[in-house]
Amino acid sequence: MIFWFRFFSHWPLWALHALGHVVGWLAWGLSATYRRRFLANVAAAGLPFGQVWQAVGQAGCLSLELPRLWMGHKPPVVWGPQSAAVIEAAFQAGDGVLMLTPHLGCFEVAAQVIAERFSVQYGPFTVLFRPSRKPSLAKIMAQSRTRPGLQAVPTTLSGVRQMIKALRAGQAVGLLPDQVPPDGMGLWTPFFGQPAYTMSLAARLAQQTGARVVLVWGERLPWGQGYVLHAQDMAQALSQDIAQALLQINQAMEALILTRPQQYLWGYERYKQPRQEVALPPESATQKDFR
Image (cartoon, rainbow, N blue to C red; front, side, top):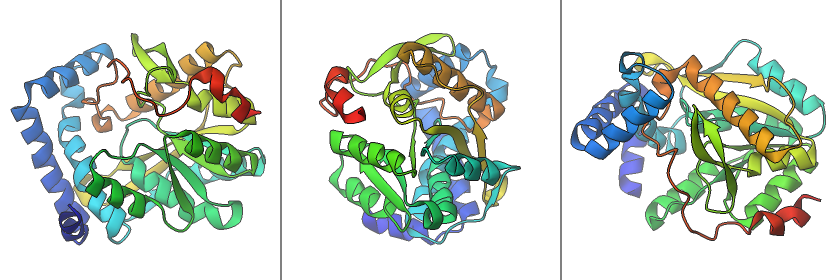
């Protein structure tokens, strides 16, 4: 695994994305389960296949670009209009910054660029990740995601405590709120009109620390030209009612996804039953960690 990551890390981005499109369409053609889930998720969002077919190849790009992002030279990245100013203003508020992104575009490059731009002045950017069950990949993830200005923490109680500590120090943390959490760590909340088990961690972090919520995502440009980093504030402050806050977050994710549905990971099993796994303690047991 490490050999292949190092091998592909030297490839130009256009070649990785070209191969990624091939891999994405191979997965589409070979897996009936994947096709059904992809089409069902698209239908739930009320979109025709003609509007999202490019997402099939984009899913492959997401996988094939990782070696370059983790081990190679940083590809070209530009900031979207006012995006850097939005993040700067959030830091200036002094209450910490909670950055949320769905499985849209390239979220890996977003974390790297934000850390590079702001960590010297405002401290490291802490991101939450789920360790891979494959030891070789888990090692690569741990080594590659933690770099100067960027600190990756696992989905454990210790990781959550590090995120709370970072926010209270006025720093930034980031996570993917449309990732299905373990059973007991979320609520069933509408997502594109269907009940989806939604993590409560993002909302609780914002509610209990007063952090500013910023929506970010990295748009993948065609032909390996690089990425555009977008950032915007939440349309409104999160409710103190947890169920309403989760609905607000899901609606914000929906709005982002609909700006570029061709780059969303429609094959992600968003509506699955949460797994029975001890990753974090029950909600009631974590309350003391937010005080």
